[in-house]
Length: 119
Image 1 (cartoon, rainbow, N blue to C red):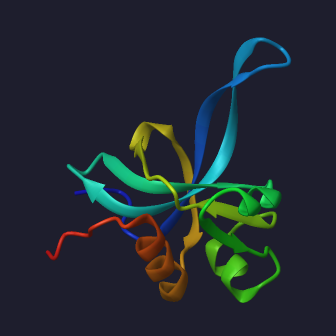
Image 2: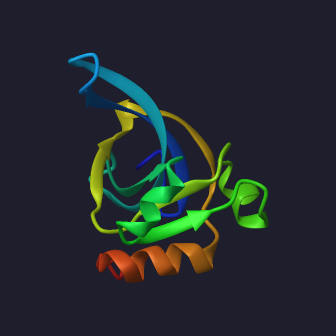
C-alpha cells in the first residue's frame, strides 16, 4: 500500500542544472499527487514560486493566504504546472504538507488530460 494518495500535496527534492554555476543542484518543490502506481510511483504535477510562469504555461496559481493555499500547506504563492505530469518516487519525498481541495484537483486533472483509474 502507498504512503501517499491522490490529492496529497508533497514537498519533493528535485535536481536541476544551474546554468549560472554550471553544476547540478537541488531544491524542494511542492507537488500535487494525481495518482499512485505500484505503491511507490506518484504521478504528480510540480509547483513553483515563480508565478509569472503562468503567462507561458498551462496551470493553476494558488495564493498562500487563500483557504486553498492553507489547505495545501504551501508557504509561498505557487503556480502548479499542468502542461505535463511527472513521476516521483517515494524516496524523493521530504514530507506531506497538505491536501489539494477537490475543485483545484479536478481542474488539474482537466488541464493535464490525465486519465484516473476508475478503481
